[in-house]
Image 1: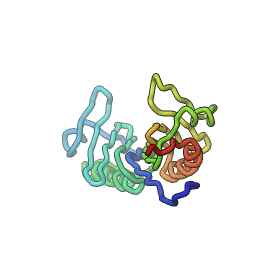
Image 2 (image 1 turned 90 degrees about the vertical axis):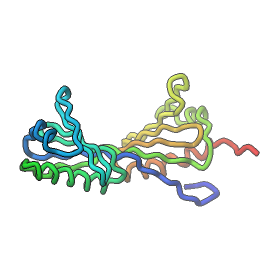
Image 3 (image 1 turned 180 degrees about the horizontal axis):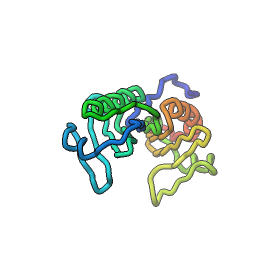
Image 4 (image 1 turned 180 degrees about the vertical axis):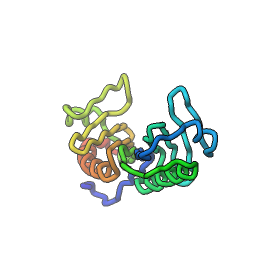
Length: 187
């Protein structure tokens, strides 16, 4: 970080999305009738199951594919997925926890300064787009990290990426670009 003050930015992870497979067919009706904290959605062909600790919501399909959302770290996502697999084992299914992977991470970060969005967009024209009539933020994409930013004029950032490391690296890369278009402090 090249600013005059050496303060660290807080990157707050708000959601981690992970998937895994059970390697067996799941009877959604059985899960809905015998499971706890479940919502059966037969029109979409899935069951939603919620865990309290770690706080996750899982979408369960009969094919055995499960998507877990709501965790606040990669470790919590894995722990929640394993707990979910254990709940399904207790319901009598021959679940084998496999193919776990984190597919998306959503984080927020606040810069210690406001940002001049028009200058930021002009300086980074091919990869930054700003449509103020449609959305109040600049969309900025870093292709090699597969990270996408929403940059607001207040200095708030919303970052999505494939994992926590990519999100942190992306924030480090974009900080100098934002620092050079910061708004002067009003006195």
